[in-house]
Amino acid sequence: MARSNAVPSFVTVSETAPGGVLARHVLRLAWPSVAEQLFFGLAQVFILTIVGGLGADAIAAVGVSNQLQWFFVSGFFALGAGATTIVARSVGAGDADTARAALRQAAVATAALAALVAAVGATLARPAVRVMGLEGAAADMAVPYLRFLFAGIPLSATAMCLGASLRGAGDTHTPMLVNAVGTALNVLVAYLLVGGRMGLPALGLPGAGLSFLLSGLWGCMAFLVATATGRCGLNVSSWSRYRPDLGLLRRILNVGIPSAAEQLAMSFGILMFVRVVTSLGMTTYAAHQIAVNLTNLTFPITMGFAISATALVGQSLGARKPRLAERYAYMARMLAFGLVTAMSLVFALWSLPLARMYTTDTRVTALASTALRMAAISQPGLALYAVLAGALRGAGDTRWPLYLTLVGIWGVRLSLGYLGALALSLGLYGVWGAIACDQWARAILVIFRFRSRRWQTIRV
Image (cartoon, rainbow, N blue to C red; front, side, top):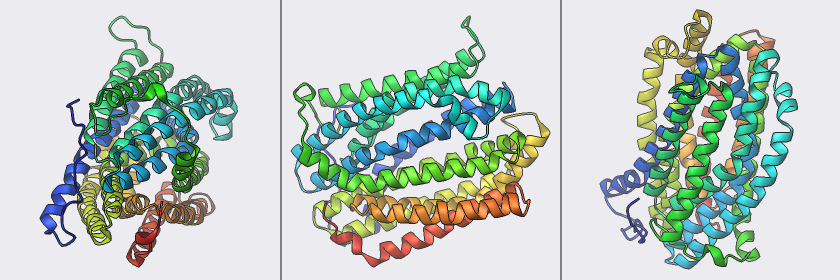
């Protein structure tokens, strides 16, 4: 990790700067995050193809377990998202001391709370997979895998918080490098342990869980070393002198709690949606999971540009340049939408060959191909929503993404999913039709909120 104690200055330009200058700034922040998320997305693809050799039950077990683990992790967005906004505003205002303090307070609180959540989650692993509709071999395979995921939560949540804070400061390179190594480690260990290669024991799904735990350990330690030694955008050299700062924690939580509520609402809603899909049978759910896994490859683009919008909007408002914040957000939205639309065309045109990468089961690949073609409709809407919601979070307007999630996931996706998939017996057509309606509804609504410019007056 190259030494870079100074935070990049993206807000010294004029509010009327040419679009090309803004595009370069957006891309400078976005591309490391896109690459980082792409590494993660590809890792998930590789791991699922590795696990796919164990059968459809293993694919279903991984899908449900990952959703459960994500639900438990979602609450930590209160600290990570709050720290990101406070750090970005502080950097924009030239207050590096507050930025460093916010990172330190959020990371320590995350580690402490995550340990408690991990213990509870591991205890509830078996009843949780039963509630989600897994039975027989799929449930038996999911439980030990899920317990490894929970064991890694304190490490991965702390690393996630540290990385989010650095991105708020404008340092997207350090998180990219740390997480690139972590995802490579995750894939390598899963490859060796799931099937038992190079003389190592064949552990099956627990091998994939162990690989997640080890990659989380790497990420946490690497971020701590980078921040303690100054080899990143924020030099936090006083970890040993940490003292709770309730005032700063309160500021972090005031901004972050709506983001945590948003993620919890989304995760719980998606869990309920997964329950609808699993009721269609394990073959259908395995096909659905393959489509989800592939469309997650657009997630790096949406998240990368959303992260860029969050940092640039937060820093611009900290520098008291609201017009610059608005222009950065629109530039990030335009770039993300174009790239995601191009990837969606790939999904639509080559859906069957892509599905065949995972399994030779013709029933699963045919269903997955259908789901992937429908998924291509929804992805551009997701890009529009994600980037502008990221811009709102950078401004501290974290309540509106929560409201839109409640409308989209709970009001649109769940109701239409149940109606289409079960009541009208449309199967995956009903499932992915509901997803498309949800994502486009949120995209349209977030555009109206952003155009109101009320986010420009929020204090954090």
